[in-house]
Every structure is written in C-alpha cells, then in structure tokens.
Amino acid sequence: MSESDTDSELDAIREEKRAELESKGESPGEPIHLNGEAELDAAVAEHDRLLVDFHADWCGPCQMMNPTLEAFAAETDVTVAKVDVDENQALASAYGVRGIPNLLYFADGEQVQQLTGLQQRETLDRLVEQYA
Image 1 (cartoon, helix red, strand yellow):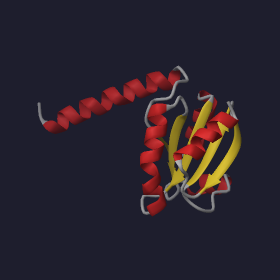
Image 2: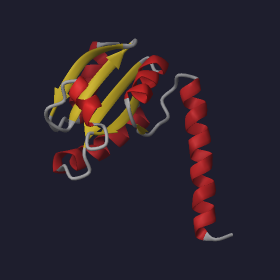
Image 3: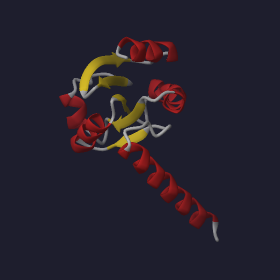
Image 4: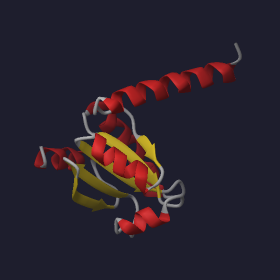
C-alpha cells in the first residue's frame, strides 16, 4: 500500500469518526472546517457549545492562534469550527466580521459573544465558564 493510499484511508477514518462524534453532539477533539451558512447553521444546531474562528491563511495573528484553538478543541468539550473569510465573504459580513481573527461563541444555539484579535487560552476558558 502506498503512502498516499494510507493517507487517504486515514483521512476517511478520521472523517467517519468526526461525523460520529458530531452526530452525538460531542466535540470532535480538533477544529472542524465549515464552508457556507448552511454548514454553520447545522453546526450551531448540533453542538451545545461552539467556538467559530473566522480566519484567513495569510493572516499572521490567525496562524499564531491556531495552536491555541487546536489545544482548546482537544482539551475541552467545546466544538471549535473554522471559517475561511476569503472563501466565505458573505458569511463573514453577515456576522459583522470586520477584523480577523474573529471568534464567535455560541451557547445553546445562540451567539453570546464575539472577540476580535489574537486571544489567549485563559480568555477562551473564561468565556466558556461565563456561559456554562
């Protein structure tokens, strides 16, 4: 089996496990990628607590935020989702995203907080505690 076949098989297993966790309303342990309003609406409906990161690949602070978001997703039961603003300009505009990184926090299906700029892990932890 070639390396690309193994990678494809692993990706398929990861996607299957992610879908299984999402169907149970649990956090997948790593950020999920959303594309479009329908996917965002579905994620808000499926997850009790959702942190959405509006970002761009070219954004330095967004890249600096990635390790924090990955650790947060792995260590908490909050689902972390990522939305690329270059691919989803209308969605970003609809949510009032004017600067990135921009984090939206949804609790029980409602947007309860919006944070713009690079955030520390402690800020994210306090955010979750505030809306627990």
